[in-house]
Amino acid sequence: MNANSPQDCWYTGYDPENSAYAPQRYLLEHTDLKDVMYEFWNGDGVVDTFCNTTTGAKDRRDYIYLSPSLMNKTRRAIMVNDSWTYKIEVIQLSEQSFKSPSDHRPILVDIDL
Figure 1 (cartoon, one colour):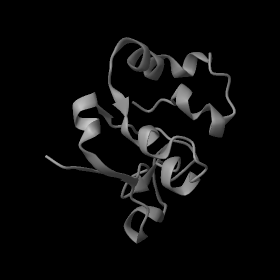
Figure 2 (cartoon, one colour):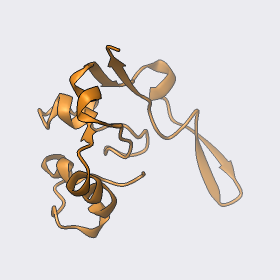
Figure 3 (cartoon, helix red, strand yellow):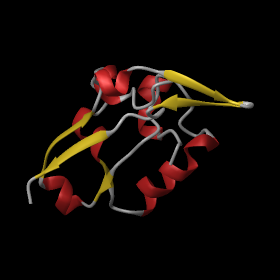
Figure 4 (tube, one colour):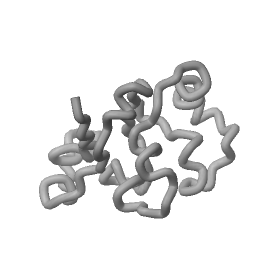
């Protein structure tokens, strides 16, 4: 979604009513879907695990939403931060720059089906 969540205000310091939260707020207020990383880490201050899903900034831009039934079967949820996802390599092409392999780190969710 490339959008911040109002559940991250403890970290971002943004006003919870900020319009940048509109896509996430809609999901949270109009569905029963759960943000798996928030449910697991719930603002406990583990910033490296919870918030650094992008390599270029310290914020969370990637989400996995699960139904309550799948959430109840979830055993683990982590943001992968290792030697393959940590390095930022900027590739400059004309006026745009790109991160290699990506500017987003993967989120790993272990669901016991």
